[in-house]
Image (cartoon, rainbow, N blue to C red):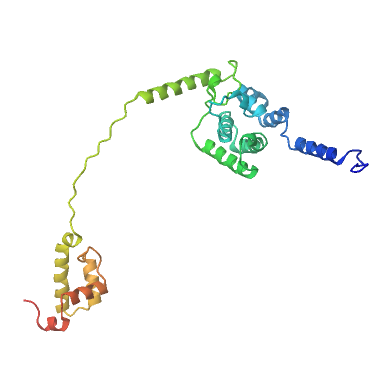
Length: 266
């Protein structure tokens, strides 16, 4: 028969379908029990009580999209990552322990709701964990009102604590929305503009007296520049004196150095 694969006993089309099924199975994330086992290995025996219903649900199922309507805001991969990282921090596990478990979880489970590549997910996960552990962010699940629509039970060991936190947060948000914000009033202040040369006129006149006096004494121009700057006297534009600036001023005032030396001002 044409196209028959004798070794396998399948037509090529059937054989290709089987390979595709095998490949898809191999790429499927580990089942729930494996993910929970990985997590329980990190916890001490007495700490399994900290596997709150919402955490167990997210670990086992990821984000269950069927629980959200079109009008609901769907949490992102980053939202879930930060929430579970806050849980790790809350129960006293280190950031290293959190990172070792979380990276696999994010790549295997949360990649379904993300368009990022696996390498970007790994990098983003590390950044989110670092942020949670360095900030003052604490676990605040919201109980039945949690944004992930994850399982919640009143028998949860932190139900009362989290319920109180949720109530306090809602009260703060309500008070903030009713607080009157002060109206910012802007007063226009008129600041008269003073030309730069006018501003430094007095200083320049003092500096010029020093220049002429030193020229009469036979002081070299470069040394006069040093004297002016040491006394803190500025040019007509408020700058420090330089050899070229002083030369330009002498030229502008048509100062004949040799003549000035022979006919000093009285």
